Length: 175
Image (cartoon, rainbow, N blue to C red; front, side, top):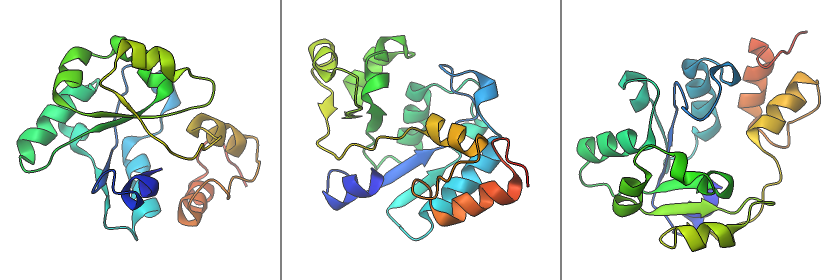
């Protein structure tokens, strides 16, 4: 998805912000943020237009997108930040902290996920932009589940990330 956005010149760079604690997820769903950051770095090492950020590691927990966007905007005043979310998150955007402030101050790009009606999203939030992108019919949750079930996920993950997961026995992997 990130490469698609860059290749189509929709954005100049994609910054991946690793969050220690997503307020809309159960904490048990996440492995340590340092491990997730390491996997992310492994996945994007060869593309200088893809960046990792651990900015939320020093921010109060839980992490809220509005706070992160404001910190990034202050720290990098010459950058213009957008927010990329899936249409599943767009449908519950009103549950986000200060979502109106995000809408007023940051462009929101929405990845269309199958099964989530963007018409409802655009009716509620006309300022959000639906992306014309390929569908990726796999979610991170499904990948983690497949790994735990010992199914092959090499088609979905960068080979270095997959090796790291196997080596570290992440997501209930055992030899």
